[in-house]
Length: 81
Image (tube, rainbow, N blue to C red):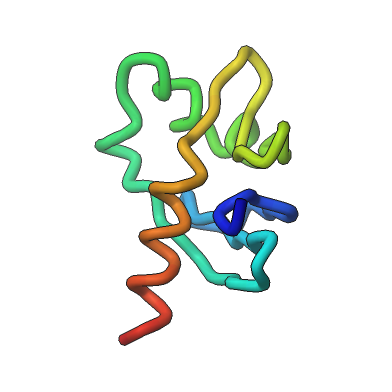
């Protein structure tokens, strides 16, 4: 699928640089105040930096992941500005 993540890198300020299968690439910011519940471990900078790609999704240890289609939509919207 075109929204499958093929590369991810953590960046300062709880941001991610993403590259998708179709070549779309860009950054998303994850505001700390929105990282609650199951996502609360991501508030820690060191843990946040452990991001990796798992089956086309953005993931962290402990089975934390983010929906790649939503991230794709966010990157696509940011690149059209």
